[in-house]
Image (tube, rainbow, N blue to C red):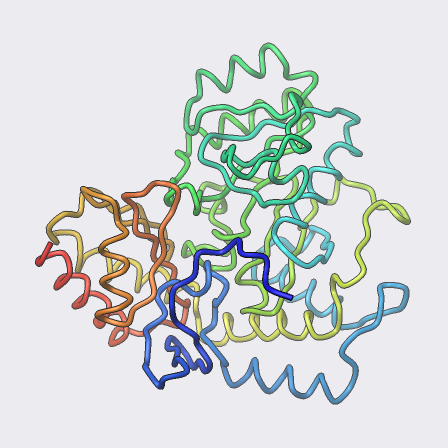
Length: 379
């Protein structure tokens, strides 16, 4: 049997990782400035993370959600405290797409409506409803397409108001990323988010903040939308939540009522996943990683802002989009193969996407900054 060939692959095989570095099967060392799509939040193989997972393996690694699991309670309590959302409730699942599926479903259960408003440039996942609110026709199969999913232009308040005027009574939820990642690090304006919140309240529409990539301290706030003091009805999270161990979560406002069987999952909230997620929160708190994300993000931007071929830098914390005056693929490949630095791209071909671990240190950022300067100056 062969693998189903859906991924374009770099010819690199990482076999070891530590902190912000990877080593391939040939012994070559790489600086990781992408974190596997923002998944590596506290660095590869953090000692506390490793110890907690290894210890849990000696106890119990899995049982279903038909029994008590005190680790779930500990995770919910610590997540509530660090995020400042202690009055919310937590549903645990396995991925960002699954979190968004459950959020959309819960919203529809709540108000009995069936339309969803999403935005241009969005990416919410590849599963049924999640891909239907993702702005990429190439990955939306005919079975996923439905006219109940309504697209509005990013940061376009006039169009937003018009859609609500015409269909507000039929809209169940609005789903929006705290910051668009795949879309090219697109940041919503405070006016735009405020208007969305206002219209949702007026029309009994559930506001879902997809913080799968922009959450968990990535933006310099626990969740990106918290900078604007917007209260979301539902928040989804995943990627950095488990530092590589698959886990996702739905943070649910207390106005939503739970009932037996309303939501469910086989693997979500298993013992190993909870231990991984608890370890991430412990390290984030103990090492002040949200503050580090703010500081290192500012440092990187200040150091690179005058480099040639950079048009704009879109950034919150360590979620950074570097817009070049050309397709970024040449720069990305040069950084990878000539300087051994992993970076990312986006649906905007000109945007180089930077998502290092929140533990990144100045000397490691200097390696990236020096390499980027060399590459850009030699274009």
